[in-house]
Length: 215
Length: 187
Image (cartoon, rainbow over the protein chains, first blue to last red):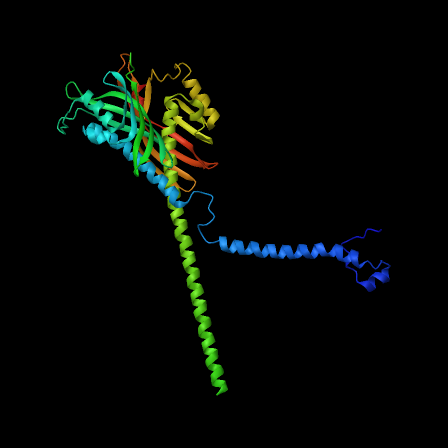
């Protein structure tokens, strides 16, 4: 059996075959040519299908591996809302709105740190409120006799869906002896936040006092 | 008769042709304006994200400095990024790392239980322009006195330029002038 060069010899007509002395091998011709024809049809059908698929999928917004504009906008809004929460904490603390302050914590949210001379871990708004009234009593805020305030700064917030982490600084100023403005304490917060009923709340707030150091 | 009818059909056909063309043009224009609106929304989103990323960069700088993470600090600068301030000037992450290492050589390592100082960073004003940006902000440096009290020591501001390098915002140049106490009188 001779093996023919499929590309050219297989395509010669019967008369040309006898002219150039090729055997009358119709079976061979068909067998070699068939895969090419099938392949071409498959190719055509495949390209048609691909074109159709492309036409269907070119409609905007369908195949999007990158985060959607809506998701990106949501992440920006979340970051802003968490920044507001960190500042609101300071505002409610400074204006002695202790109930409002405690409500910034989620149902299982914890406050962790040294307060009133001992380490405290309060869980949920009720315990947080109890901790505050234990240390501060039930003071009334007097805008004419402000005792102190927190400067909140250095916010670093990372949002991941319905959870987030944050790190920030607090610097506490007081009205010192002789009615002068005096920096008194400074520290930082390490927080975990949670979206609870579409509102960002503290899930865990760890309060660190940096200066003065505990001696 | 036949000629008039043919004429009529020709007019109908022409009218239909114009209507189809007009509809297609209108659809095309609508698609185009939708793309334009989307790209302007994309541009606005990108600007907000960039502004946020740069705000984080300003704060990370402070965190790295206050915790003496010199490597992390120096990597916030672009390949040819420069730092200029009270302790001199340096270029590129390696140069900036070396400068800080020299400046802090005698300082004890960072101990979270014995914090000696920190930078209060405020008044961020950031302007993004594509892959470049500028910012101005304030720093107030607080320290712990020998008798363990919180004291404000220095205050100044930052003049920054940024560049987007491999998809991340980096300092292209940071100038950190001291404002109070006045550096000339302090010497």
